[in-house]
Image 1: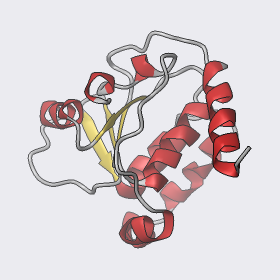
Image 2 (image 1 turned 135 degrees about the vertical axis):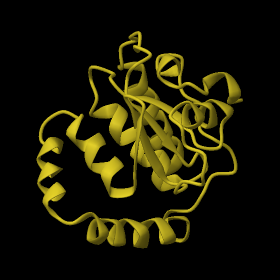
Image 3 (image 1 turned 180 degrees about the horizontal axis):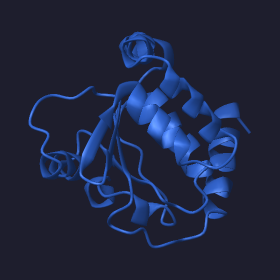
Image 4 (image 1 turned 30 degrees about the horizontal axis):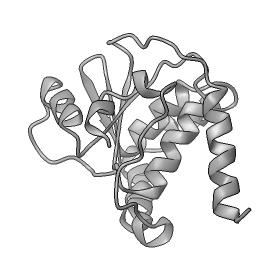
Amino acid sequence: MPKERRRMAAQDSRSRSIRRVSVPADSPLVLFDGVCNLCHGSVQFIIRRDPQARFRFAALQSAAGQQALAAAGVLGKLPDSIVLVRGGKVAVKSGAALAIARGLRWPWPLLSVFWLVPYPLRDLVYDFIARNRIRWFGQRQECWVPTKELRARFLDAGERR
């Protein structure tokens, strides 16, 4: 079996082991670049480390993602990598990444120590990675389609084919 097919089969078996849960509408919402491989990997990382299924997801490019931003009062352009909408507030760049890490299972909340680093410095590192993410990790031609078990956690699941 080719390496890529083995990897996809392993991903499918992990996805099947995730229990179906109902996700509250007030759960934190992670908006991500739907075609970026790094962002896709980040979503998979969050899903595997969020056993209580607190986080919901949507692609920034989706209508659901845009509606969530509008509802939070965001009118301007945001970074096209990862954004966290929680309690009507929007976190971007390193602030979003650290807030997400804080909501994951042990040991990821330990990354909260990086809140002590001034945000301009944190965001400088974040921007460097974000600027190069497509070159380093590539991109998809289409957004990833979640499995049946995960569909309830994706606001834009109906938009994906």
